[in-house]
Image (tube, rainbow, N blue to C red):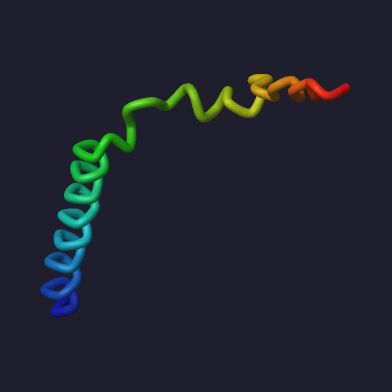
Length: 55
């Protein structure tokens, strides 16, 4: 029973840290664009090679 006096405050500290980390990430823009990274792999952004004007 006395272990609860340690585990409950410890759990609240961990919860507080997780909430702080979430709001820090939101404030720094970590969740601004969730769609582009997922579709970036299928976008064809290869550029055509430049033709050599000497040829």
